[in-house]
Image (cartoon, rainbow, N blue to C red; front, top):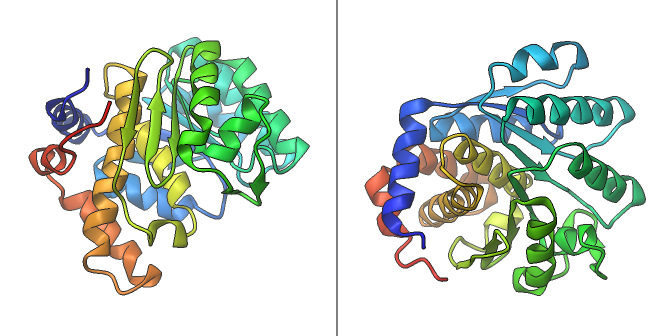
Length: 267
């Protein structure tokens, strides 16, 4: 069972190793997610040109795939990157943004899952339900379901692909099919900022590069988002001032403070 000491150790390892996280993500969030990874202590690269993927994935410690703004060329690059990462043993974190909202999004996410099994799938409840084939309804890329509503679907996906699944919400639900965890915290301002869900996926990607298991990477990454969000909200007056305080919180939170802020973890 995970303890707060595991969270402390994972953040310490991330800060020491400064992993290179390769992101093929949507252009709405590139700047925010890159800055969040830098603030946390990781090293981001945001590249989707097919011609350089093999070289870059030879350097990367994790691959983040985010289907938020799809096009045919980007889909092909994601498939190429997933295949290359799978061959190299580079952990993949998949964000199925808007799965269930359109056939293209759902089919693309399922196709990527078929190319190489991910270490972690991170999405909202509606997206996870859609991937599992349940009757999840999606409003744009926003969830209409609470995280716990997708618990069975998350366990199903975790078992099918041998991965961890993180369902974000007021309480995050995280599972690897054998072990479950509910993670409270965060702040209501967080859903009012475009791209914080995608940022969570990138942060989980950074932890996937250093944590000993995908489940632990998912818990550490989502817990880091909750902790930084709580700190930022105490200083922010709205969404506009939340973001710089959030980046500062990612940068300034020490491993010991991070562990203390997540007591207790709820199994």
